[in-house]
Amino acid sequence: MRHSELRALKTRASVFAALGDETRLSILAKLGRGERQSIARLTAGTRLTRQAVTKHLRVLAHAGVVRSVRAGRESLFELEPRPLEELRDFLDQVSRQWDVALARLKAHVED
Amino acid sequence: MRHSELRALKTRASVFAALGDETRLSILAKLGRGERQSIARLTAGTRLTRQAVTKHLRVLAHAGVVRSVRAGRESLFELEPRPLEELRDFLDQVSRQWDVALARLKAHVED
DNA sequence: GGAAAGCACAACAAAAAGGTTGCGCTTGGT
DNA sequence: ACCAAGCGCAACCTTTTTGTTGTGCTTTCC
Image 1 (cartoon, rainbow over the protein chains, first blue to last red):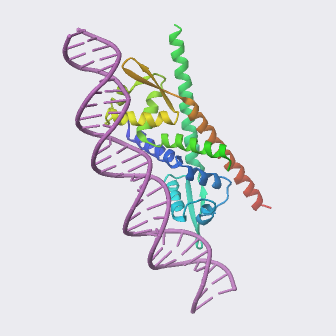
Image 2 (spheres, rainbow over the protein chains, first blue to last red):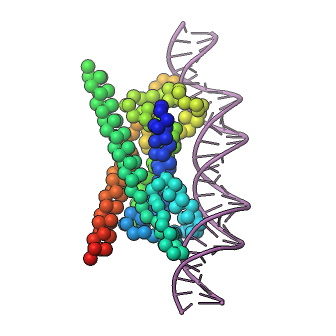
Image 3 (cartoon, each protein chain N blue to C red):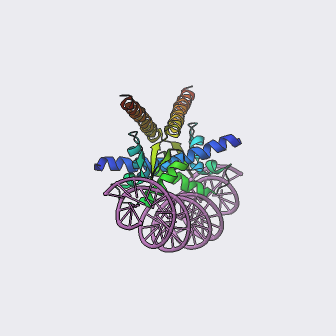
């Protein structure tokens, strides 16, 4: 495995891991509507403290799924769709590869 | 949030979490070729012990991404593409929702 | 200027994840 | 019958993750 491939693997894994949590998926759902939202606002309605939500946001930001902008005393978060699109494409590729592989195996059996 | 939605959220998070690890992504890549493979074979080439790989396989199986069949003294694993396809569709939906939201916000600004 | 809203940073605790080793049970090949 | 391959289970350890609380710094509003 080449170095660049290993890098891509790590990146991909970190994005998947960022999405592998209920709280973070909920946050993404809220941000999916397009509006920038503050931490306090994202915390409202959950049973977590603001600090906990902040940590989740950091995980998302580190994976590149979200980015923040300071606006006065609040920091607003918005969705960054690129990494998600890359995951979608990756999964699509896996599905296609799977289909091809199955077809090939089946054809081999029927020889 | 309804009960069924919460269920779906948990399921989705667990599948994402299952993919959020380099080793497990590598395993999926190996299984993506369509061939059923034993634990020993999946372990070969890695720096991990068979036990560690077994644990990773359990995580994948619990998320429904993989399933195993006993064949004599070895247990063969194969890919289960459905959950992956669901994730792909979910991500696609998020991307589309994002596009719509952005367009709507932009139009609102240009009023 | 002072109160309150919104955050960030740090310390701490509990739980989960990731990995190893040791042991014992089947199965397959000779 | 015997030996080796392939697994499963359990105990154990270390690191990461998830969450809380406490403190202090800006920014906003009156």
